Amino acid sequence: MLRRLSAPSQTTPAANRILSLDVFRGGTIAAMILVNNPGTWDHIHAPFEHAEWHGWTFTDLVFPFFLWIIGVSITLSFAKRIARGDGRAGLLLHIVRRSLLILALGWFLNLFPYFHFATFRIPGVLPRIAVCYSIAASVFLFTKSRGRIAWIVALLSGYWLLMKLYPVPGYGAGILEQQGNFAQYVDGLALQGHMWVQSKTWDPEGIVSTLPAIATVLSGTLAGQLLQSKRTMEEKASSMFFLGNMLLFAGLMLSTWMPINKKLWTSSFSVFMAGMAMVVFASCYWVIDVRKRQKWGKPLSIYGMNAIVVFALSSLMAKVLGLMKLQAPIYQNVFAPLASPENASLLYALANVAFFYAIAYAMYRKKWFVRL
Image 1 (tube, helix red, strand yellow):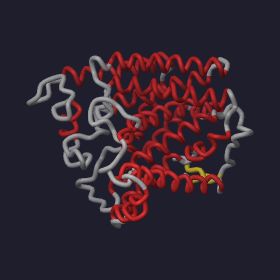
Image 2: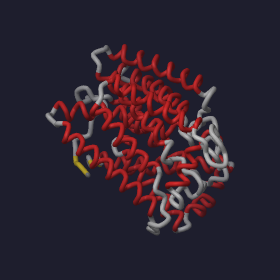
Image 3: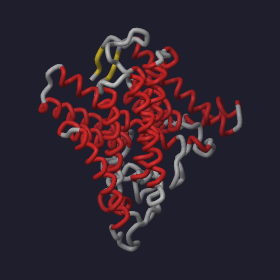
Image 4: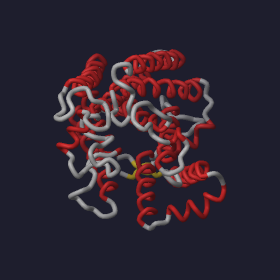
């Protein structure tokens, strides 16, 4: 839904508005556009590629950061809705409506431009966001802090047990390689012909690996609760920084038994990335909301005000350029002569970031904010 609203000011914020969350969200979307749109996939700097399998890179931070932000936003958004008198039934309808809209947008992008329903990819970034949001928001609505922690533990340990103990036919139990793991086995049974085109036999946003991704969102709700507590802003920042580092340490310890792996979204990955998100956000919160160093973050906050729309438009444009066979000529004629192949590819990606910032800025100036 497109709404014309008064844009929040960076220098005179609305009461209780957490400006650092807008900046963090905008930075995450800008990073998502950057890593998703290189000039050529043949020449990319290592940090801007996903880890080949186990391990992590800068690129592997982006999606878990966005899911974690959704968790924080659930807490803050629901508090406002409850304060204005929304009941549980109304909030449930809001969850269902928003989830279906995000899912429909994701499937539209997966179907475009040919709309081959028999073979289109069912999972994907936006479909995973829709599923994770719907379940995490529902859990948040019906539980308190201890219940949410119990859900996180159950999701992470349940996924761990499935991946480690279920005997996959032809492979056995405990396989964590691309072929033969339990998540790949379930995707093959349920999503045959509807998976990521580059893999065909498994999907990085598949069914089973969505379980620990839901835990990532729920971990964000706990950070949101901390932000709503009666502690001082300095205490909130230091608590998030401490807890984030504890989660980083726990994720590294867990990786001894289950490696950090984004494509499988392993339990260690979920814990480690929740810690990383909390540390980075705590730093933003300290600088922007506590120390009031706000002007530098305004461009990123503008990016974050229409985050899903900007992401969807970037995905759509990439498909259109590919369909019209324009991306390669643009890269070769405009960017390739300027630098080495890796740097030229990066320049193309940065041009995408700048282009979509211009769109976000135009929407901001017109006070157009899309709330799905």
